[in-house]
Image (cartoon, rainbow, N blue to C red):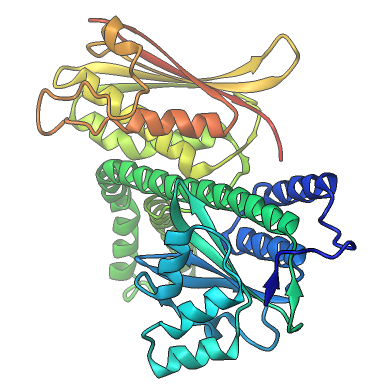
Length: 423
């Protein structure tokens, strides 16, 4: 039973105390890294203020409400049933949009058309209080609370505080879920953009493994008749082992690039990443009569970089440069330079310059906009308009910047500036 008349000792009676609790609750929302963390903070905060020792938080998932986290002693989250959208409790919370006490809850649960298993699960965890979490008038989650005490007295001040906390929790939860959706969408876009350059990488891989495969094949053919030649066996075994290791490294490079992973900053040499990208596109460039000039600075400062993400950026720019040159012969110049800013900070600049058709001034200012592309001339070179957007985002996440200069009929230059920071 819930009584809206509070005893004088109610700690939440003071407006100042309520404001402090609400402020602390908002701070506890913070920037959680996972759904269980934010759900636990919401449930813990609401149960503490309402003085209910046990509870469960339900979240809307695929047209039903599923338990996410609980504080029930001796019971796992699996002990709580999934509730459909047409369940009376869900319907009453969505329609009433206010905190429900024991009488209203009993009525909702009794009117629920549940199977025996679900009814037994709810009977195991009798509910004293239900708190809806609403966002823009829509029920996105709710908290069910249970107290060991038969009569739990809740004042009007506490109910107001719980309602304010619930709104704060709903906003935080909705923001977190939107961020997760955005993060997953960005991950999908990055993976799609990577697949664009896999064909080029595969072509380079096929070309590069021919030599090691030839040496391995030659060794297998000659080994039977020269098995007693220890010098031949020893020398050729070393060569074959080196070639096998080389093939393994190439395969691992392709697998790592194709498989999207969470960003992993490691201590990297920018020159080595640039060389790896040029290594894979050289075959395609040669087949199209495009000359690649490389000028990599010695003693370039190392940096904390995500190797696969940086490869994605560079391959995107290199493939764009080849598309800009088109069917005519041309040149792509790749340079790395050691940078030193006025404040003494050391960094790296990677420059990719092509002799292609260039970009018009009106297009240049939109070059990093999502879905903006100038590749509509043919089905072969048609672009999605996401490559440079993703590249721009990746460089920003590395605390760097990407710049572009272009002159129609002469060519385009992209410059990537990266700090040599260490985590």
